[in-house]
Amino acid sequence: MAEKYYITTAISYPNGRPHIGHAYEAIAADVIARHQRMQGKDVRFQTGTDEHGLKMAQKARELGVTPTALADEMTQYFIDMCDGLNVSYDVFQRTTEPLHHLASQELWRRMEANGDLYLDRYEGWYSVRDEAYYDESELIEGEGGEKLSPQGTPVEWTVEESWFFRLSKYAEPLLKLYSEQPNFIRPESRRNEIMRFVEGGLRDLSVSRTSFDWGVKVPGSEQHVMYVWVDALTNYITGLGFPDEQGDFAKYWPADLHLIGKDITRFHTIYWPAFLWSAGIAIPEHVFSHGFLLNRGLKESKSLGNVTDPMDLAERFGVDVLRYFLMREVAFGQDGSYSPEAIVMRGNTELGNAFGNLVQRTLSFIAKNLEWLPQIGGHDAADSALFEVVGNAVQKAVPAAFDDLALQQGIDAWLQAVFACNAYIDEQAPWTLRKTDPERMETVLATLYICIAQLAVGIRAVTPTKADALLDMMGIPVENRTYQEIGAHWYSPLAESEFNLAAPSPLFPRLELPPEDAA
Ligand code: ME8
Image (cartoon, rainbow, N blue to C red; front, top):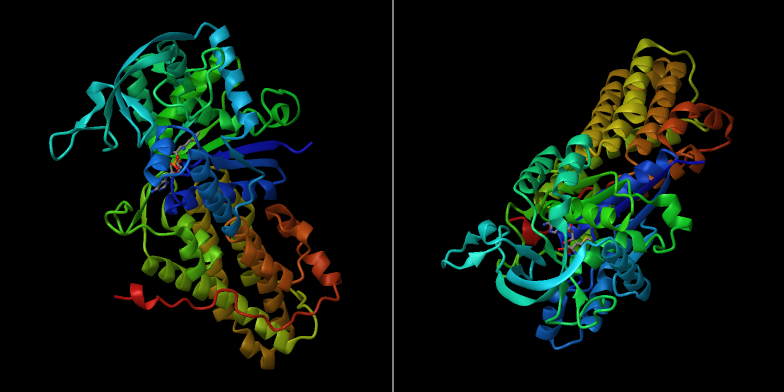
């Protein structure tokens, strides 16, 4: 039976339309999911929207609509974004679904049965924007002397009756977890931050609110709704059918990877394992916190007028170019910047010139000069050397880097192999061999054909549409489009096939910078 792999993104607040950070996370998770499927794993991929909480309630009030109407309208944009960016999720979990309420209430009952919940009064700071409680000691001072959360968001003093979760009890087990499973939180810098925070001791956590009612009702205490993070985190098990512990839950839980942004590491690596332990449920294997994407180095905000619709970028530059750019530009885990110029630059140099031209030159030359697929005559050292470089990249370096979530490094290994093919074609000059040594020309073209098919597979997780279009064009059967198969069986199906290559159309047409960005 295939090994399972359960990957999730954070669920987004649908209090507005998706921004580039949402697209970035969805794409990264999709690349990992597709990569794992290509390795033969039984992948389950979940994303969704986080529809409760004060932030949603306040936004709806501001707009004069109900929270339900706001959630319904905005969630559709998130679904459309995932579909438009070719994000291959299996489940889109919305937290307003009745089954999610049942799952959250069951988690609550189990935590209560374990003696971890008690009623008290909360007095302290709350940031609606972060949906987070902060200690006085964590706050920073704003420019006008006002108190701000460590993330720089406004905080308000909150006093109300609240249920509390005995988080303090879990500080020791958490520290043990972080040291025994150093990969539980990645990257390491984030792990260190979390360890330092927990070493400072944990206070019990307020887990319900009474001052508004947009949320999941606390079982047996119906004037309370759950703190939005309690129900939000539960989404990861709702989507597997919890509280039914058979079926998908039995098959896929615990998650192999929760992929999230750095600002929500605390919730996933402190609260979530503690809730799960309390409820007697296994904890996830890994949490990876990626960095933030900035618009030319600046955070996007309405006041700066620099908010970009990711679908707009996809439309202007192409979905696969955008996917490639985002994964290639920034070391995964670190913050990074994007701009239309940078997208056009990478798209043109790496996908267009380096890979696209290699494909175009080789395939159009074959289509023009041969009426069959080129066959290998006799190998020479240059051919073997190229097979070695490309085979190593596609069968080893790329999958190993992607397994390790070093997405940028994996793409770099792929690109180095593309460069090696370009150097080979220039050196071997098949256009000259056409007259002097047609047999050798055919071997060179066959070598390139095989290498290009491998390169298409190597980048398939990142640019799935373009890679599959290329592999279709080349007559490579779908079942051979995995790292291992393309290496093992590349030749026999081609040698036997009657396949005749048509003149190729360019894969990555040259991108122009739109005039508004060309300043
Ligand atoms: O945090 N660059 O939702 P959200 C990269 N509902 N990633 C970014 C980003 C940026 N500029 N801005 C945000 C929430 N993100 C909660 C999650 S999970 C049980 C609940 C990331 O809509 C952010 O870090 O504010 C998070 O992982 C995701 O986008 C959704 O953010």
